[in-house]
Image (tube, rainbow over all chains, first blue to last red; front, side, top):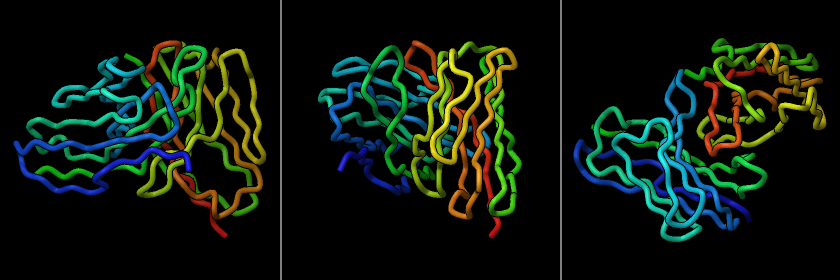
Length: 115
Length: 111
């Protein structure tokens, strides 16, 4: 089954404790992206990657890091989480075709709470 | 800055009626526009994509229009059903690799 898998789905942590949210896709997609979703603000892009070793900032990259060492994986790293990073996070992927990522396949989301 | 507006108030309609959701945008010239469905606690699911040179697109009971002069897209669900109740997101993209999302409109279809 084609899917984007995120882990963990739920996490409560404390300020400053480094954490990683993993994302893996089994569709051989070049494009992967991380979004955060907050009430009233919609989905905002954090980082995206067009292929292995190619990453770029989205609209809200501060406080986050990413890496793309393998095509299928795109982990999101919070080196020193703060309460304003409490949010619902989504990973998404797609093949690149004709400019732009086109339709996106989303994971089920990771709800992060930073105390 | 780029801005996408979707009605933040929930749309409440009777089963069988046509639901019409609106997506307006400013300070942007998108190459395409997409609509997604999102159920509570789930990731968005792609529904339709319409390009800037297309006026209308249909898929089963769904219809999307795209007016680049008005900077607006309308999303219609005909013969609505309670199972159509969800939040609907519009998203705009261009030839770059960013996709900008609206905050969504919640649709409630009463039996």
